[in-house]
Image (cartoon, rainbow over all chains, first blue to last red; front, side, top):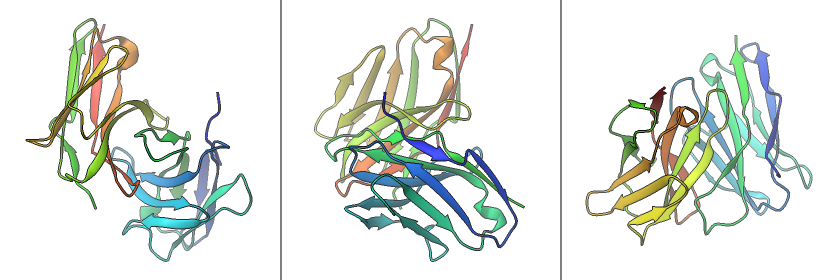
Amino acid sequence: EPEVTQTPSHQVTQMGQEVILRCVPISNHLYFYWYRQILGQKVEFLVSFYNNEISEKSEIFDDQFSVERPDGSNFTLKIRSTKLEDSAMYFCASTPRIMSGELFFGEGSRLTVL
Amino acid sequence: GESVGLHLPTLSVQEGDNSIINCAYSNSASDYFIWYKQESGKGPQFIIDIRSNMDKRQGQRVTVLLNKTVKHLSLQIAATQPGDSAVYFCAEKTFGNQFYFGTGTSLTVIP
């Protein structure tokens, strides 16, 4: 069964460093998302991406964050100048169509900022 | 952002009993309401959704009820099994195709 894959599964970085989290959405999907989940808290929307551009972003998704779809398969989240409070699980998700409530999530990338 | 919240953060049920997980929402403009299950260390997994023009939808062992009058969503799990132990999130999808999640209810099934 097709699935969303994310790498790395866990990344440890020093405060102030840049990290790139990678996602390969399901191949025929059109809408892509990044979510963040701080330990024990809810899943927070960061950004959505459609037709090679950001369709919506949350207040969390400030200039520190950026997304790219550099080729036909990868979807990346870049976090510049990481802060301690960026430590969280980052989930990529995709969906093939909008007439559905179903998002397909990856297993997540755990980011630990020291 | 949107506001989707849950009434209870934890729920414990005996194996074989039915479970009911509740959720309140605030955005009347959502077109889908959804339940996701998240097991420890994994990403959320879709369980069932309901379109905003419906009030009940049934799946395999699960039923979702939508009460638009009081902006309330519930998930009923029949004959709860140990494998149902997880955190359950309600979510809403806006017409702009954005998905917003609630806080989550941790369901523990007691064998």
